Length: 114
Length: 114
Image: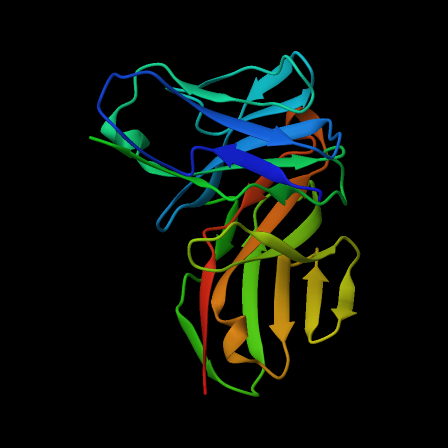
């Protein structure tokens, strides 16, 4: 089954404790992206990757890191989480990021930073 | 001004009625427009995309695009309670350093009551 998986689905942590949210897709997609979703703000792009070893900042990259060492994986790293990073996070992938490509979203990771 | 704007709602319509969801965008370089549906606690799923002026129909859904007015809408005919969700408008920029970037509006909450 074609899918995007994220782990963990739910996470409660404390300020400053490094964490990684994993994202994996089995569709051989080049393009992958991370979004955060907050009430009233919609989905905002954090980072995206056009292919292996090619990443770039989205609209709200501060406090986040990513890497793309393999095509299928695109982990999101919070080196020193803060309460303002409490949010719902989605990973997405598509074959290419073109004008008609559909992005497939993972199930989401709900993060609470205390 | 936000790049993509939607009325956050909630929009409430009776079962069987037509629900009309609207979206405006500020970047005239935008070329493709997407409507995603998101149920509470779930990930967004694509309903339709459109990139030519005019109407595009798919079952009970019709997307309408007017590039001159920078306006895209989604009509849902014969609305059902199962259509109750948040509808996200998204646009892709076609040029410059933002090529391929998907920008979302904040979403409109739709409630269809029996």
